[in-house]
Structure formats: C-alpha cells, structure tokens
Image (tube, rainbow, N blue to C red; front, side):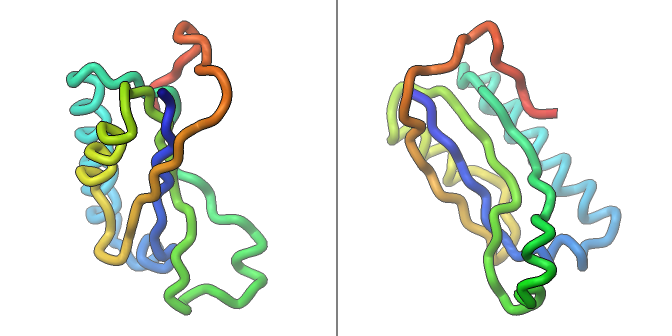
Amino acid sequence: MEFALLVFGQETDWDRMTPQEREERFTANRAYGRAMAEAGVRIVYGARLARPASAEHEGRAGEGVLEVGGLWVIDVPSEEEALSWAERMPLSEAGRVEVRRCDGPPRNRASARPPA
C-alpha cells in the first residue's frame, strides 16, 4: 500500500538555518531514506517542495503557520508501518508529519524513483 508522508514546518525556520544546519538536515534525510531502503521499504517518490509564491503574498511568513515543505511516498504493507516510519522522520522542532493513504492502484514498480 502506498502512503504519502507529508512534512509540515515553518518555512521561516529554513530561512534562519545556517548553511551547516541545512547540510545537517539534508544528511539526516538521506540517512532516513537509506534506513527505509535497507529495511525493504519501496520509496516511490520524495522531494523537498519549493515554497509557493502565494504564501509570500498572503502575509503569512513569520506568523508560525506550518506549511507543506516536503513529502515522501512509500510502499509498505500497512498503515502501522507507515506511521512507524513517520515517527522516525527527522523534523524541525516545530515540524510534524501527516500520513495519508494513497487511493488508486499502486504505481508500476519499475517506474519508482528514489528521492534525490
């Protein structure tokens, strides 16, 4: 079953990170992806999402609003396993992850791409 792990955080947190802190976050996410792959989890897709232009114009920056900043789509046998992986995801202090089952037929396994 495929599940989307939607990563929420404050975009202003990313803006305040030093280059070293950003690299540490990338390193933690790469290790997280490796751990899933080594455990046999099929990673269908993963990405850090660009901030939508509309967020800049809505005056929400710095107001503590959590925005979707990334996602992973994984193929695991159960929702319990998806929730278990969500609990291990590296997040910012104010971040959270939401797990959603993907409706529809699973994607062709041959077309799956791991996150960059």
